[in-house]
Length: 273
Figure 1: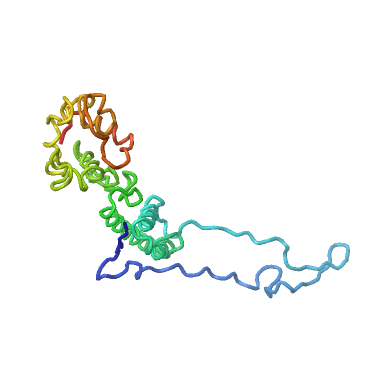
Figure 2: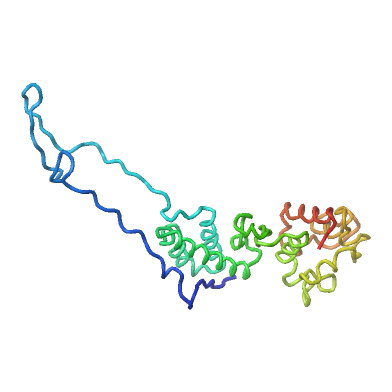
């Protein structure tokens, strides 16, 4: 799947147009020290305590170099957003990878200007990730967040399945349904519509306290994931409880174990909306 990710702000203007770069460091002042001419070939003579002539020339000691940190002071965690955006472009639009690297990579002017310049780039990368995540919701490289501190924690957001969400008992589950179950299957008009629909408006009522068509269990039995056929279906233990068919999601890799455990925890805590 390839798609172009367009990032801009204002009047269709590349945010990098406003970036500035640090001025070059000033050259050392010549004429200081024992060799005022600054010419490494110059030398002068003087006498030591014995009266012998002593030649004074340039120092043979190499100058000590120093390195500086990122002049913008951009927090590494925030720069990670731009690194992940570049990875997302590599997956969804390989033809745009070079431009993304030039605009937001380590050598770009994002990180050699002012903190405001860096913040502008970080904002642009976040917008690009949002576009990429919408185009490829199951692609980890395009997740909008990788940790809670990349979300608006002050307003109650946490990182759930790559999305920044205000956490409610059911919102974490909806992110899982959206990322793994809804597309082309458990959606109105999808291949699994006759079984149940997992879009946000219908998911809870479609599965909680509803009987399964395949096994003598409820799809979701609040308080008991072992009695919930949906959990067995994604856990791969559905045959053991009298079910049939294939493990879910169909024609895709099994859900990560931590996601399966999250579903179990949600059920055990009451399967709240």
